[in-house]
Image 1 (cartoon, rainbow over the protein chains, first blue to last red):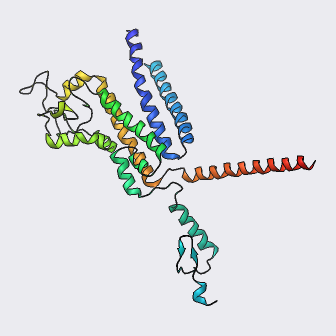
Image 2 (tube, rainbow over the protein chains, first blue to last red):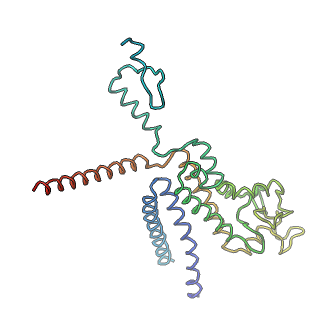
Image 3 (cartoon, chains in turn orange, cyan):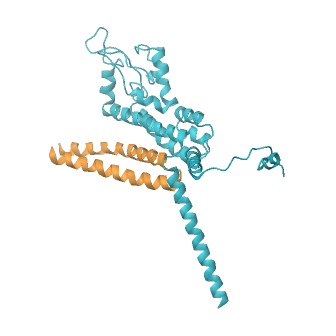
Length: 63
Length: 238
């Protein structure tokens, strides 16, 4: 059971392209300079990933 | 010099009569500067409305038209990549890109598909679903191997129902969670393209701040060069 639960964690990998695309497009709509777009995009993606990870941990702890 | 001659000024593109505006107050000059600041973009937007249409039609195309190649590449890779990846995830034996379709029949069966209102913002990649819907709203024909076609409007237990029919239940059963993830990705791609459309229409949000930073950096660079030159002169004098 735990093994299958562990396997389902790999479904979270689908979130990576979504996080990257969202943060880069958002950053691109704020800046014109490519360097600034990438720096803000990566920062934002780290925030999003961290926030989602926190949610996952909380859910694992609660349920 | 006569008054009429005084009112003729030269222009960079040539000489033509141009009335000299009367002296303005500080307030009106400030208002004018503010107005100019609002309309003048550092980024050349060309025909912004046409660029916005292109940005909707194919993500990145509007920015390519405006000559903003790097941003065009970012938008195209992120939005189109997300859309096609999602569509690919929701593909299988039951058809291709089954998560992008239009269904407007309330009640049992496929139901009303609200996701398409977000997916359509991705532009041309989502338009085959509209063609399929106009061609066959009930999904009986399933043309082009069911590519973005609406699911067949049958429910388990209804007359003529079989396990192999591309009804929404069977599609969900076959694709499992990939259907949901594909739906989410294609929907997000459509919504993200709205950012790109507004960017093509009005330019980046932090344009003024970016310009200020650029000016600041340039000023700092000039200051450093000046200091360096002064230092060099001092050592030469010694």
